[in-house]
Structure formats: structure tokens, C-alpha cells
Image 1 (tube, one colour):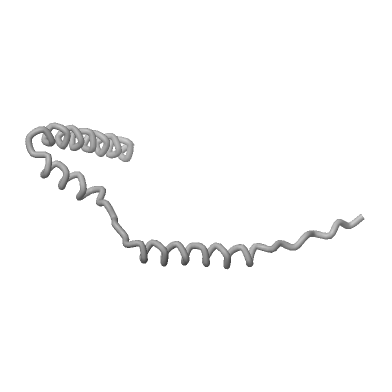
Image 2: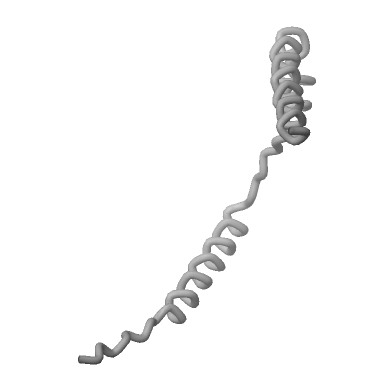
Length: 77
């Protein structure tokens, strides 16, 4: 019961905050943009970092596929 009330309060807070940011964006767009980016920042990477992370993911997936061989059960008749 308390948790559902708390979740309702958090949803109301998010609604009021987004409304305040919307209204504030008419008067001071830069400040509203900075406040909204505090909660949900943009992450930027260079091409080199992107390629390195992509290679790590591909290598990880290749290693995982090697270990997924299953044995078949023998059927006893």
C-alpha cells in the first residue's frame, strides 16, 4: 500500500517537473535545457571509442557461441 502511494507521488513529481520545464522553456530555454539534461545526459563518444567497444562486443559474442554446444541425449529404446 505504501509503495503504490510512493509510486503515485513519484509519478506526480515527474509530471509537475516536466510541466515546469515546459513552461520555463518559453522564458529561459537554456536553463530548461540544462535542467532536463541533468536527469538524462547525452553521452558522446569518438569513432575510435565506438570501434573499440564494438570489437569488445563482437569478441564477447564469439566467445559465448563457442561455449554453447550442447550434448544430445541418447534415446534408449
